[in-house]
Image (cartoon, rainbow, N blue to C red; front, top):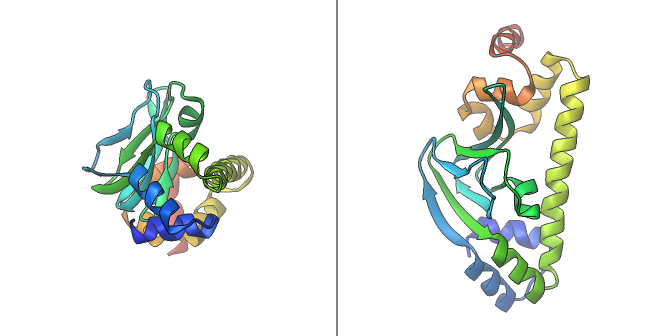
Length: 190
């Protein structure tokens, strides 16, 4: 099993070596190139992805404009969770910002692990809770925090890889501000 994925899983719950092997067998290694989609809107999201190496974003379209809602990189999970959990059509795209190596698990394999390994349900619950808290935090910040403070909070909390390698247009969209405003804010705090 990939050491980073194993570390993430064992930080949530304990598993026997046999269970770790069973979990490992449910993940598939995949490569994607920059700009390629892990999941597309209009389709049912059938996988959760663990990024071994790379950078990806979740976004939706509003009036023809891309709105970035989530950014993830090495050792992070990414999915269209609502579509995945409900097995419904997704309103989001998941796109690689740069080449990505991922480990993916299908909905069917998640259900299999839920049935076979009781502690795996804890992993699923924690991932869902983390996703919910991230989204709730983002909505609160979009509505209540001034643009400069949003960017400073982003700088203080996001992984360095996301800060350094994500195009500014995606960061601005993620923060709910215009690229021009983000440029002004960056000039004022540097």
